[in-house]
Image 1 (spheres, rainbow, N blue to C red):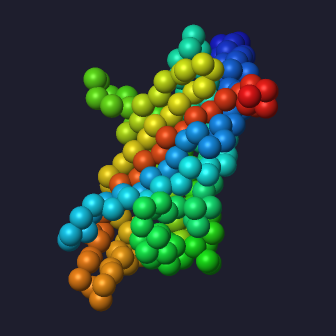
Image 2: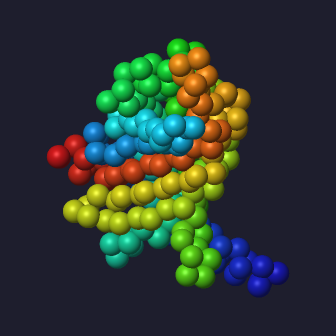
Length: 196
């Protein structure tokens, strides 16, 4: 019984210390981005938004990111566009059903590293009202108090979200089902973000 109490006490202290170490970070406005990209039968395509909102619960120790409790980012679907191709942007908004589902959400938590391979983070993406679990490779760095999280995956598909790959010019141009999702997320502590 005494051993159980000691184990319980140790576990309680561990939980308290872990919770105390976590801090809420907010996204730095207009500094990060989300990119959706892929290929068609004629060329590569890319859509991007730099208008991100959200926050993260992170553990940073000795200028290094040691744990991600969660990250949640919302993007206005209407801002996901190709600035050099208005026709593509318009088509994308239709395919992403931006009218009925105006928000694209990136949610991620935890990470692991096996051997010398890249770090992995579990993510969930919501597009057009449908969610898909996706495993992302990610890197992180800290510069001038900003925690950068860069995550990408080429495992996503339009069909994961119940979407048909886009076509154009009467079917002459057809996008492939596979697409790449990349997010580059800069986070700061709320007080630091307000002072900048």
